[in-house]
Image (tube, rainbow, N blue to C red):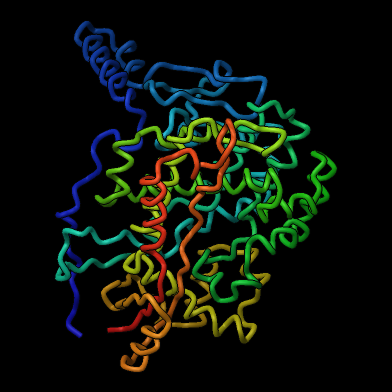
Length: 460
């Protein structure tokens, strides 16, 4: 095969300035820049530097007794948030794209977030990529002759970041709805640990044994393995049986986790993808820069658990999530490499050379090193999606006919779609489906239908 060359991505225009930011942020930022320029011109260097760094705000100014562990940072202003010692919080700031707020928690201070985030089980998630071997979709305007060589992983946000954002949102939603800390604490720990049992290699490796390596089913095992069930039970009233139900999305708080999980991965995935590629996701986020404020619309109801106060914003969020599945998560081009690890791990797993316990207690780097020793020469420094083609069929019969005619089949998948969220409840009674127009319902359901089918990946 002729040597392939990496094609410079000159046809992929960068995201516009301010993509993912609050729409008012840049006006305040430019004002600060102008003030800094004026100060420099007047010989006021110290004042100019302060302007360049942004208005200083201490975390104490952002404190709220309702949720003392979580500090909510406004995103409409150019601010420099500092800790009690006057040091900028920097990378400790949890950026929440397409919303009005960022967040900060002191994971080294005394409190529940230290117990969660400094546990070995949670730290491991920092070494597991959120999106694994998924790669950006090829924009529609690119023709087939354009070849891109991808080094993996393409996306570097981790399960640690995702899980912490889920935890923060759960804490805030419950606090704002009147739940005291004693009631919130067990739910915070359950939702924070919902991905704590994801195997090394993420979803790609989970497909080796979908039942045995399911993160929900292994949640209790991981907590017991690290002794967290007893420690958290003693300190925070944590109940492992109840927490397991929450992780399985059972009950009111299980459904709350289902929502905060969806909003966290949608926000982060769409932000990082939008930075890299033009497309439906980027366009939608530009038009709806505060779509993730949907989390602030949750209201608890005695009869229905929780409801949403803004049907329009809930629909916008669900539509963005649908575009993420259509354009990215279920896009055959993006998924072609996602099962790369499965092919290497499966025979080793079936022989017992890689065990379930190892996968649940180690991270991606360990797995790559292990495979490098067990499968020398098979770990690539880069991968070319064009090596793998995909055909989609509407029926099983069509798929079987194609399989009889083609050689070198790599793998097959049957995708049945994803949940629409149209059954989520709206304040005032009824579901979202009943609160929005027929056209909006058809749009959302049409996107879901477009992803269903039988997919065959085969080598060229």
